[in-house]
Length: 270
Image 1 (cartoon, rainbow, N blue to C red):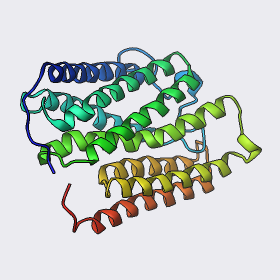
Image 2 (cartoon, rainbow, N blue to C red):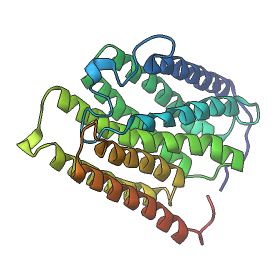
Image 3 (cartoon, rainbow, N blue to C red):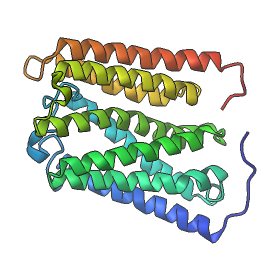
């Protein structure tokens, strides 16, 4: 049930301000990652190890357009949570600091890549994924107060989580490829299939825990399908096993979310 409204405190004002400033930091640093104003595009930084053809699980370049949606959502979220009526929200009190941390970690990730610190970027994105998972659990524990909140807060953070889950896989693969590391000597194709199978399993777990959150599944499916498309690009890293595994994982992610959501439709809507 939606937590009852309570009076705002000075701590609420500090938290909402930190979240808003963190959103600004995230957006400013995104300009470095895009190379639009300064810095080097992520796909070209660190010797191109994060480009669309660098590994067997790298998403196609167009996949990263999802960041535009995420950043717009983070800005909207920052404005929303700063409203006087939202500052004392129990949901914002529980998740606000974690949300701010996710924004700052995203900025730190971009900075690490700009300085060619690929393994540091891996460490940062793993922590970011853990933080977003925490936000997911906190927000899933209660209903948003309105449809607008469901879109601006839950929708933004869940898309963020789904995309970062896929990006984490790509980031780790990029770091290993950059150092020419092949664990157990299985080869890129075999590891791609194994990792993508793991993504499929995790997507089922997330669907069950979140009662079929479609925003998470949509972002995961988006990333997986762009991995599949990139593996069939004649000018990139071609891999039929990875392409097939990515498509299968995308189907599993989508179907599991829909099935769980449908099965939960008889329960109290959240």
